[in-house]
Image (cartoon, rainbow, N blue to C red; front, side, top):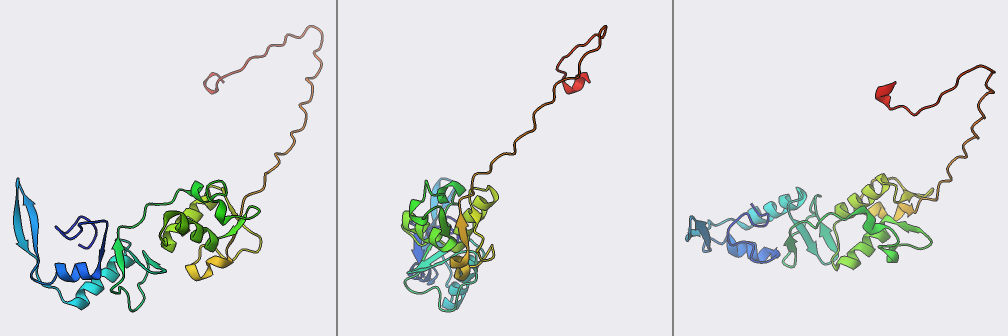
Length: 208
């Protein structure tokens, strides 16, 4: 119910906070619900504060809401005790990050000599977007880039996938150019005996 555009009159902007939820579920808030071609007032029932906080924690854990609070950025994970706070901001989850967005040409601040770490990539992406991105979003982008072989793990890299505390141990690098193997020369055709007829044609599979 707390996801954007589900409850009437709850989301009037791209973000809400704990105070907005408390006011909405105070028992005195009246929402405007569109019925056919007119709006009908609906009184929102009162909800106790522990229930509101528990619902926010579940919504963040299930990936329905993205919580930011200073350096904290939580999505699709357990919410630590004490969150949400009065300064927590709730919003819709960020859009997925295309794998090409993390390569050196598109994210130069994250790379040095074609090498980086998962933590550096996360910091650079957050800087570009102006918000501390949740780790799950960055991890999916890196994972997709690894699958597409846009990047590869370094020889001294820590295990992947990992949680945010181990992100600094995951080293990334741009794959080196693979030199294709040299094909052996095609041997010349055997000499044709006198009186032998020879023909050559390219056939489609259905002609064989």
